[in-house]
Image 1: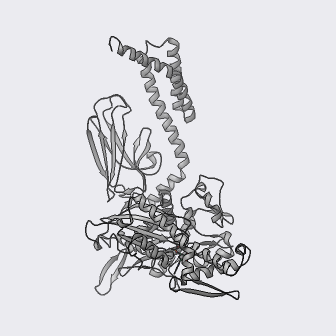
Image 2 (image 1 turned 135 degrees about the horizontal axis):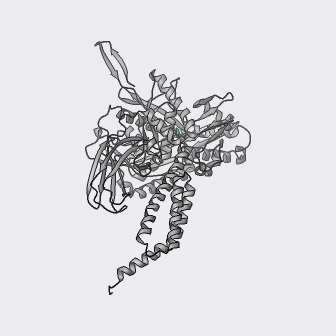
Image 3 (image 1 turned 120 degrees about the vertical axis):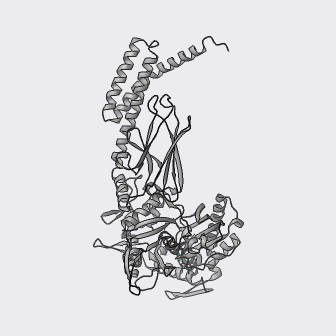
Amino acid sequence: MATIGINLKEGTLEQTQDVIVGIDLGTTNSLVAYMKGGQAVCVKDAQGKGTLVPSIVHFTDNEGFIVGDEAKIKLVTDPGNTIYSVKRLMGKSFRDVQDMEGFFGYKILDDDAEALVKIRVRNRFYTPIELSALILKELKTRIEGELNAPVSKAVITVPAYFNDNQRQATRDAGKLAGLDVLRIVNEPTAAALAYGIGNPAQASADMVETIAVYDLGGGTFDISILRIENGIFEVLSTNGDTFLGGDDFDQAIVHFWLEQLNIEKKILTEENKFGQRIRLLAEKAKKALSTSDLFEHELDGKRISLTRSEFENLIEPFVGRTIECCKNALRDAGLTPENIDKVVMVGGSTRVPLVKKSVSAFFERPVFDSLDPDEVVALGAAIQADVLAGNQKDVLLLDVTPLSLGIETVGGLMDVIIPRNSKIPTKAGRQYTTSVDGQKNLKISVYQGERDLVEHNRKLGEFILSGIPPMPAGLPKIDIQFILNADGILTVRARELRSNLEQQIDIRPTYGISEEEMGMMLLDSIQNAQSDMQIRGLLEARNEANNTLLSGDKFLKQNADMLDETEKATINALLTALREAASGSDKDVIHLALEELNTYTAPLAHRAMDKTIREAMKGKKV
Ligand code: AMP
């Protein structure tokens, strides 16, 4: 949607583009940012205080919910109804997360290990997608309040190691929150963009840079090695620890103080507020020690203290573990620290001076830390959004294809060649063959969508590869290539490899398809997954039956003199049974008929083969 504005000075109409916002949907905190006067800025809360929205949802007694700072308070008072770290569950099944069970204070449903996880709150079940959507809605409200205008388009960041399911879940959460997610961007890519790294406008042409993005938050650590060339960001390797961060620093301080005060550790698990108070104080001390050398405080009438060097001794093992991860990431990328041109710091815990010092020493260079490490990913997302809005022409960023692309095969089945969410530009292909002897033409129908039957998908175009030299069915090798370029133009090329016959067409897959239609197509595919699978099973069985019927008839004709009357009659009876089964709609019955026929004819086929070989050898001397 574009809006029309009136330029009062000039008396002209101006069409202004919708703002596209950048969102960092984090494990602990989330932020929303946008371009304000050519500068990326994070949006503050209504009181103008902080930019962070804790990624926490609390469900109230009256079926309502609250998100953010208010929900965070409930983490202590009502943990069972307060959901945190939902990002850890995105796109995961119960089997994927069962090792983490003790980590969550809320109930994760375990009745189906394979299905995507659901979280139980009071008497309702929520998917991680729904819960993330609530956080995204809060961010949407925040930015709409700031801009005093509706916002419907966003770029959302995810960790570089997120797989397709996790990325798709994030996209779906956006959709559910009423946001058109124009792109899912890797967090390290966004962090680099925030520093202007990889922006060809700020770098010399054809420059290749290799950078490390070190991201230490409250509960997770990620290191990513990226290669940037001509505005294209490529993730070379990622490493990290999903349970390592500033929370470990806080805990180490708590244990240190308990020793200082001569108090047993078990006090932390007892039903009292002492544990919570000392933990909050520990985080306060940690933050204070980022800028001063000593922290002192009173706790229940007793003095507690911590010096910078005591703190550094406590956290040294954790920092050491992050450096080990950096070594692993470099090794996987086949690089050494000298190969890294720039190091970018992300996450609140990189404010700790020892962290900065250790990372800088390991990579043998100063680190990029001038931007707020909590905001840097959201700022980069806003820059990326600006690129998509067409305001920064120099930056080329890779997109993904939103729906699968494929061709129709026998029985009206969709054969996917480029799966949805593939990065573009991309190229993929497969070999096919003919199903009839002497077939001269092959119709190639190109479809887009997620359903198993092409009739439920969207037809993009078709063409005929004609002039295939006559050959028995199954012999021609027809190579079909799908080439999707950076502008989203699909070229389909078909080539018969034995004769070099070739034909191709160009198609624009997203042309004329709205985001809503795309959403409907995806929803359809999810809702019909079960029935689609059954239909696919039946059609595949029928195809196999039809092929077997053809070769069975051929076998009878070619080997008439080798088979006795009983054998011929039995084969005919089995073929008739198969023909009948194939006209029915039970795939198991078809499979059974196929099996019976195959079991009976297998020894006969061997006999026929032996005979052919004997005949071929007749009269030939070795
Ligand atoms: P993030 O997950 O990126 O929001 O990082 C949050 C973590 O950063 C928490 O463990 C915070 O305690 C920590 N943090 C925030 N500010 C500071 C600071 N000034 N010094 C040290 N740690 C900090």
